[in-house]
Length: 221
Length: 221
DNA sequence: TGTACATCAGTGAACGCGCGTTCACTGATGTAC
DNA sequence: TGTACATCAGTGAACGCGCGTTCACTGATGTAC
Image (tube, rainbow over all chains, first blue to last red; front, side, top):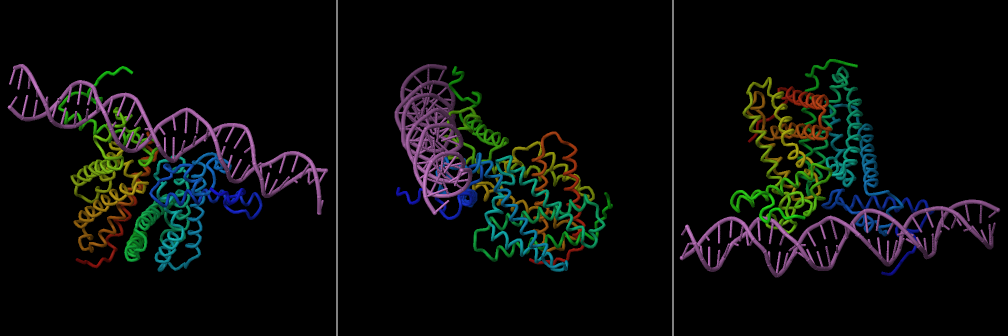
């Protein structure tokens, strides 16, 4: 009721451009925050988002054409987080003995540090907005390809066909995605149950790894 | 504009009770039909659903307390379909040589015959309505347990611990769910691409099966 | 079989509300000289 | 450095619309006698 600041509601430091960027980010953050509750993206309203971001509904259009454009930028942001995680895994130890355990640890740490990003991807992967589904599918396909390339450096796997490496990468990514979704749907602060989920995920990856030397793949391409 | 029928809009044959049941089903069908498009359950409106079902909005309350109750009944209906599929798989051939291929065929046939049911489960598994998410999780857990029991009858696997059988069943169900979601997100009438997805899924199951004899599981319980 | 009454699935008017989008605006920031 | 003007992020009133829910109702179906 009292107008505290006729300028930017986000803060008045910086140039006009940098304040605009801050509002822009505040809108993205507001959408993610609202989805932390019990809403999917398609049931978010433009007015809710601006309310949480602290601007008037009409100012939304200074930043996005519509909610779908905001959603697509969220997909980008979330997968930037995911790629950071992959870089952390790649920087890890080479010995394959511990690679499964350390990868699982990095995965879980990143899920906790970026809970909302992972939640967004999980919820919209098969959600109601086609444009978001397609953007997420494309990113996951990319991720599978990269993993397939990484896998080709392992013993046994270096003789596999590209097609079989993709099949294997898909299986592993699928198991990881399911694990992330299990961790996310756990009530917060349940370390024992979370450890159980992680233990199962590690076993699944070890089981898959056991099969690799047995598989007969015709090298192609 | 012309009132054709002052009685039930669904049809006037049968007793009052049976006509009520038909309207009830029409509401469930309407919700599924609307979700075939680009909407998730949480963005469906009561009025949309009654419009498609052919009744007035206020009559909705003769059948459900609110949309959530309708959603929960949809979960029930969809998993009834899924259990029919499982029964079909169980009735199939025993020889493990062909069991993967025949199971995959049954899966794909059922996905096409009950596209909307599978789509509903996929879309709401991590969707915006908590009550539906929980109901679906519970049903999938049940499904995993049953598969674990079935698996315990196979060679090698009959010596595994319950925990490891659950881990294996989870991995297989996860791969199946991902396959179903891939098939569903394919544009219709793409038999070659669909065959490719199925071929990958079969390979994944065969890979997992290869690992079974190598796995060291301490029998527990 | 016929009559009188109860039941209840579906109707239609009405309500207050939050929505997305339009529009003319304000006033601090940025730029040209 | 100072001035005059352009830019543009954010404002606030207004709009028409579809929403969920309430209420009193209608009239065919079901039941008791």
